[in-house]
Length: 285
Image (tube, rainbow, N blue to C red; front, side):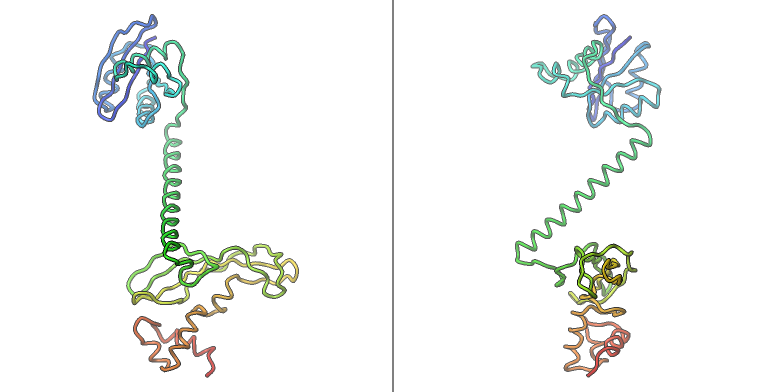
């Protein structure tokens, strides 16, 4: 049995071949590539086994060996004390020591998935990294707001603001209700989920010349005591209304000195007659 120790780097691969008696029979250095890797391994007579320490190139080396039918063992570098605590440390010496440790069975193998399992593992790692990065950025933004005394955005204290998108003269903010409300009919807190209402967009305010819409994602609840069902977030927007209550209040304030047409066409405010018609449907002078 020929034991091949390999020390991997981004540009080169260092090899050392040790036979069953522990004698170094071959050593070499090749470029980090599939052709260089397999080209050296195939010059070593069978039976042969390759040893490599866990690192950034370990998964690539394992995939390559599986593809070409070679056996590779990925070892735990924390257990290879002979290499880590050695005073003499360079790539050729590390490769020789790794081969000697493999020949004596003094290594701890690390399992790596291959094929589709490896792809799935990498996707899951990338997903969790993206989630952590998004959370970190959100926390930094919230901390900056708190640093400047801003405790809530858009005046929505009991709501969670999520994704923001937009274009042209509008901005849309995904909005969800925090926690759980009490039953509006009997004030009971004994509720259970009764589905979700269809997301709807309502005008809330304007910022920098663009209308700000809230895309409301609201849950439906059913009371265990009175058996009534209701949709959360009723204090923010009335049923079938296209404006939030703060937007309605602002529209009424504008109507103090203007008519419906002027409010509708006013720059930076409501964009269509349908909004003004919505106000007219419930506003009684």
